[in-house]
Amino acid sequence: MYKSILSIIIITFLFTSCKKEQNPFEISNQHIGLLTDSTQVKDLKRVYANDSIVKFIGGDEFTGNVNNIEIFEKGGKKLLTLTPKQSLDSTSTIAGIRILDARYKTNKNITVMSTFKDIKNNYKVSRISNLINSLVIAVDDINANFTIDKKELPANLRFDMDLKFEATHIPDKAKIKYFFIGWNN
Image (cartoon, rainbow, N blue to C red; front, side):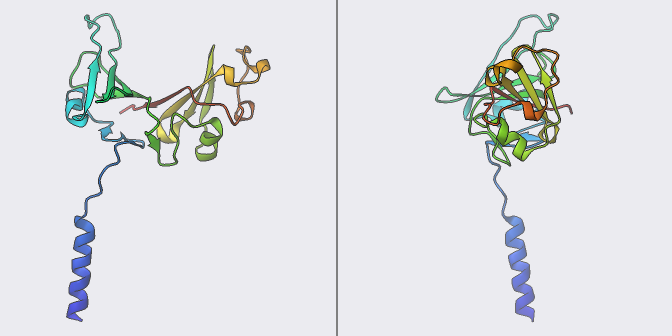
């Protein structure tokens, strides 16, 4: 009896002491890889220690310009574009992320290489916005917006700005043009 209790305690200790390593390309509600919704701009060098960070400095904080931050792999491949909540503020958190690399994926394997069918089969489409040259598919479950170029639509649907699009209007094979995550913390 004593040996079985001791064995259970040891096994429990081993399982709880094993730390799960974060996947650097996983997308969820509160994180994208090692970047979280509470990461401040000043912490990006620590989060992306093995990558290159390029900050565009507009020069004048009163112009209202957005100062995007681009993340590149050391080899030069562009991974992400980050938009801070406040321009030129190192304590600002990140408001939006544009996913550029296909290795970033949700827990349901949605990437920048996915199609509209992949999105609608895995998530509830919250709304579809009709813009001049594109549609924006919102998925509130993961705070994501997927942009689909209107060139992916049938010709009779491309130019009607008054059309209220529904999921049935969009072909399954329509490719994602852009993939954005927005954080409103």
